[in-house]
Image (cartoon, rainbow, N blue to C red; front, side):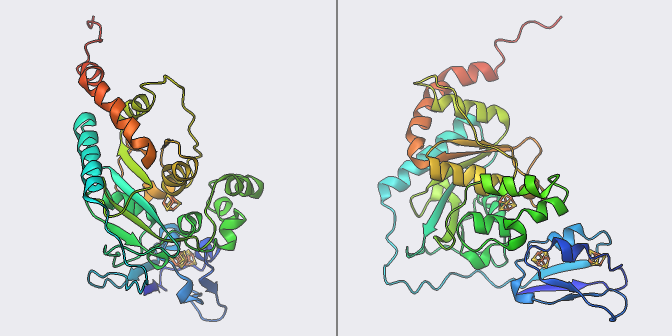
Length: 326
Ligand code: SF4
Ligand code: SF4
Ligand code: SF4
């Protein structure tokens, strides 16, 4: 349960929180004195924190009950079939090689979009609602996280990934103009129209685990690293072909769309610079960016990386090409 509380002494009644709430949870009520905002639809709050983050007076606090570690009571007729030992070992090797050759600071993350009707693995759900990108950022530190719709906090990411209906203000793009991120409603509507999304209700839950300890076959592997590591990943993919690459980026919805959904729907590797949302809610360094690698592309990427890791990467990193400084 999400608890929304106002500091009535601080609140000036500016209405910004009402305007920016994507789920129309808050309302202005006349004649109730200082601090005239009420929580009209508490059950619609997804704990996205937009109101608290944008309130100029810091008058709002959002609190969530934190139960002990828990699991989804699946109630599925189809029992969950564990991944074969061969695949577990194969993905663990991929993870080890990525970390070793690229000297990654964070663990590569395996992402699975669990389809409607598919059984759920025995992986803990978070005690509080999280944004999808927050779950990825936690998984890079070694946590496995299963998130059905009710565990997701970002209304954008939740609808993009096919877990829930898109709220009206997001569907029209209105909120991006209110947030000052796009100039006009037309531009905002265009941004929404051009980004891909999965059909509402088609995904049952998102699962993120470190690639070294997968429990289901991943759809996409996410790497969070500085630009130099991204360069080697691109070169690994094209090691045998020398082809140029095209990336789909808008700097909106970075981890749900650019790192996950593009690779998932197109089968192509995609790079992302991150977005203001995922950067604001996490400890991501300014120098970090994201790569989403479809699982079917992993063998070719790993093969290319293995060859590059023998000479090209160590040579370049030891700066053997650097001319003498004058
Ligand atoms: S944004 Fe803050 S100050 Fe403005 S109405 Fe909401 S709670 Fe009050
Ligand atoms: S946390 Fe998000 S959904 Fe909940 S009231 Fe604030 S803006 Fe609305
Ligand atoms: S990347 Fe952006 S849109 Fe996607 S879940 Fe995170 S904050 Fe939401």
